[in-house]
Length: 269
Image (tube, rainbow, N blue to C red; front, side):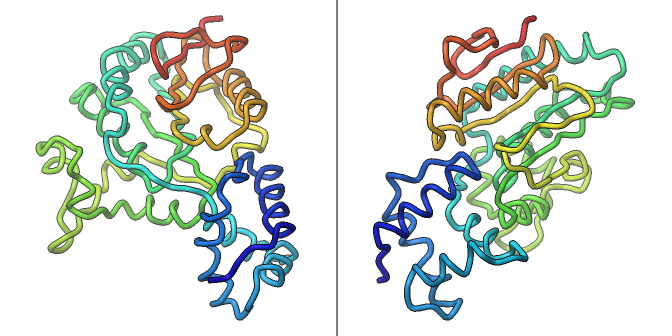
């Protein structure tokens, strides 16, 4: 197996942290494991030459390939179900009563392979039912990794991946496409818009959000990067809107958000 030199390791760690906010300084084995295959398949016999090639690629394609390999994507349907219960019991009733133009603004800011935004979309559908006509409940779902975004847009998952969902949801919101795989039905897929976005970039939006869900990605950020991102989220959260984070994550006491319950915050001013 190829081995990273100390210089190459530090160079990659600095590149990923500076450009994407992700701290990989304790992930040397992960970096070696994930990059060995593409180093060899690209015709190189050492990390140094490949890294030089990837970081100097003027088209950006190899840099994107490198970043896709190094960003961790692990998710599943109904992950941390307390959020979806709170969405149905509290957030959606608030949106229904307060959003006069019937344009619900929801952003899933680390969508990975799509399970989280699709779970949000199904929860919305369950909540509104027949009252959904006339509402725009389109969900913006973003991720840094172009590979997982392609998977998410397709909306195809194995039978095992659906195990966290109620069986009636599987029947209602998925269609079987072969012996092992199911696809999210067109109606739900059409309500999620997937786009590439780097959380380190400026957040530009036409209107503030009623809900921002950014779960289980900030655990890879250092404290300063995480706190700065949360405050940028605050700036694009509607007054009365909510922020969901992962249960393994935390928010600085200096945040302008108000704490509601574990992993749930609200903009009250």
